[in-house]
Image 1 (tube, rainbow over the protein chains, first blue to last red):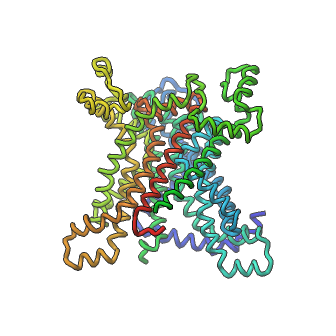
Image 2: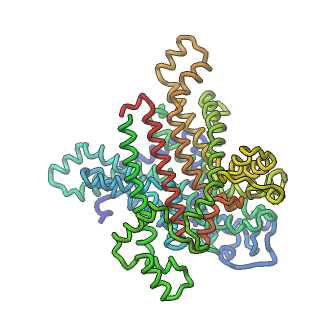
Image 3: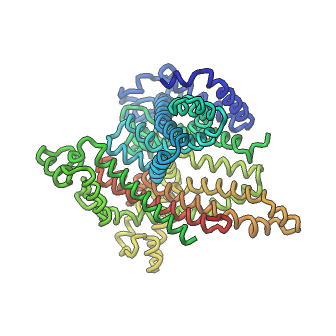
Length: 297
Length: 336
């Protein structure tokens, strides 16, 4: 039903706006680099099953004779305690992290955006109730709510996603509510109201599509934090389970060997760092070009 | 002013009530059978049935919530599944070690983060500003648990200058009587003048503290920089400069004063982050604090313990938020 309301035609100008933003982003060298690396990471994630050197090492396949070998030409990042290629696993980990992060953020958007649009458009006591609930969710320190939820639902990557979505949605609700309040005063919404369009259609057909660009910007800025949260939860034992090549989980397992096999913990950690850094740099770039105070041209 | 603070406190209480409602929902409503969770995976049917009655799960949810609230107010957080001890008693034993860590890293955030931010703003767009900006973004992008391992690898394994973990060396615990006043060894040993213990405790704190402080240092430096840059654009600064006042005087006595508000707010809020970050770091440094307690509880799926720590941390976070709001209100420019 939503796809019928949000037609390609209404999204076209939004896409143009996004392209303009991307153009602005490229003007800062560091941000430009981050943009390219981010695209590269998505490509790696997409192609991971085809480009990893040792595809069978993604699973539990043990190869004891190659146990904990240091980095070499054969194994760029060395091998782990089961003799698996760390490079293949780190590479594949990109797919797991990005996939989980995108789905978590997507789920959070699915909860947060409609609630924000409803709160902002309808106002009154509905707005009051929704916003107080978001306040309460936001009064948990980040990560903590996710830890509590997963520990009760049982550790798995699906539950991690759900937990992250449940602790992240209030941010989108706040953002979209603010947008909706200003959009509500615009002529085209008032015209739609005047001809008796139902509030359902106004919210999902007019308000939501018009909040898409700030929402996408915000969501991309959040990717870094979400990836870090996923890795942290897995590290605590609340996320992916072995043999999944998830970065946080790899570091957690490597703890038993790291004094003798530094490569086993260093490379997955670097992967997390680079990925999170890239998204944070992008976020910073976005913030800079969107803030009228720092946007000079 | 007074009425604002009163209003803010009442609002804080309402938020706390909401927070507790969520933890109640997580603990009692989400699991399909909380009684089975409560008694653990190896319990028999009868034990589960007994637990159901003991926990009052046979009563309607609203009654359960009332009892839950009553227990919370009495400080009763239930019993740990792993140790069968009251969770509140266990938390009380673990909190001082974490508090010590959080406070010291808070100090790091102030004495490194603030000057870094000021310097960056002063030298805007110069090399050092770029480096400090990159450091700030880098610091918030680092997985703390990995940094902890990395530090151990370098400072313990390679250089051998700092201990691997724990609060004190074994020799020290054997040779000396460790004073127990607040449970914070650094403070206790300083007060009683036992410098041998103080030195050893400090050496053990360096790595965990720096690891935890990285995030707030980055955050505080960024905030100080942007707040200072904003203030430096104000008319009164231009006026001060046009009077021919020295740049240092303008910066230190005119501009900096007005950036204290935002910096203080970030500092208070980053305390909350730091607290949760200890969950990821303490286990690596074998630091016997709240974080280690949670990490162990997570592994054994000891969920009353996790919920207890969650409620405690959430209460701290809400309180810090209120403090931050009151700091904003103290600024005479903010009319409430």
